[in-house]
Image 1 (cartoon, rainbow, N blue to C red):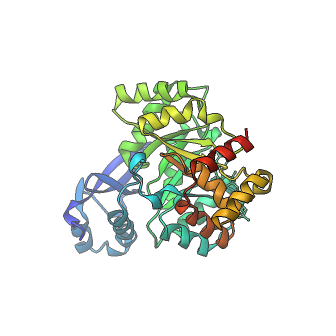
Image 2 (cartoon, rainbow, N blue to C red):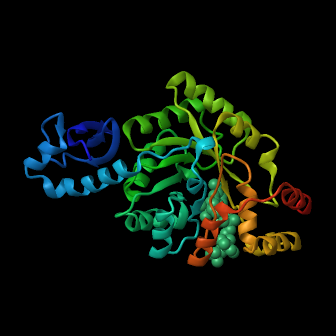
Image 3 (tube, helix red, strand yellow):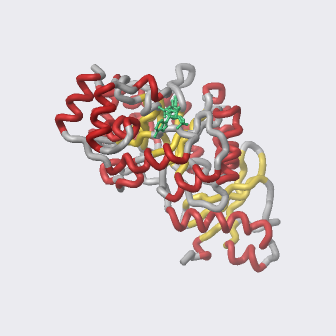
Length: 331
Ligand SMILES: NC(=O)c1ccc[n+]([C@@H]2O[C@H](COP(=O)([O-])OP(=O)(O)OC[C@H]3O[C@@H](n4cnc5c(N)ncnc54)[C@H](OP(=O)(O)O)[C@@H]3O)[C@@H](O)[C@H]2O)c1
């Protein structure tokens, strides 16, 4: 049951423009430019807005609030991730397919996207496809917007297109601006409710440590995830980033878990183990990524049967000898 009295709208100034921030129990669920609810009040409960004839405008917001109440914020308590939340769905090169999205949402997959995918098209289409669903979404800021000045507008655009408050990642390391500059911008967005939590990508342990040190001092924010390439043939993160993150409960969002082009990842060892498990080779490749705690693979697929396979890979348990064989085969 939604406590509508817990829903507040507040007018804020954002980049010199008036903005209505809609919050539920302190968590932002929507933010609209202009005084959309005709608000002269600083605060107004949603119940009041409804009685003041703004029902059409707030209808959209109600939909978002219902979704948030049902699903709650994204949980990255990695060591406690329920089985079902350990699989993701990558959308690089995604072609709109409602069946895929419905299935991904039904199984509570973590949907990964980026503002740059399809030159912005993917975020827009995902937002439209997800309008009547609860979903957990992570997105990434493009390299060209990775400055303290450009970041807020980029995050705001992503959040608006997606229709949900995303987990937000710096796609790549940034060499131009200090942790202080980027960290302040990220925390500002988190406080404003434009993003839910903060992640980094393609980075080293030094970079994670340095940004975390700033965040701890500045606001107490925590880096929730690191997005890195990880698959049978590319195990570079095992040297330092993976153990570092596992020790600290930071989720690893593993991209290209099927090697980007799965045919290139296939070996006879993989195929043999798949036959023993009565499953596909791709499922074994994903089960291998999933063998360690705190890792969320985000395989991309445009094929419904493949997506079903990927979801079922969560239930495959590899034995220690099988893991050893695979490790040796891809050494
Ligand atoms: N942060 C970064 O810098 C970064 C970089 C690259 C990617 N990513 C993210 O990671 C996601 C995944 O990585 P990726 O796109 O590089 O490739 P990937 O997931 O490693 O591989 C995708 C390929 O695997 C095939 N596939 C998927 N499931 C399959 C299954 N069950 N059986 C057989 N084949 C299967 C797909 O073909 P079908 O469509 O035919 O299934 C596709 O050709 C991206 O979509 C993106 O969200 C992030």
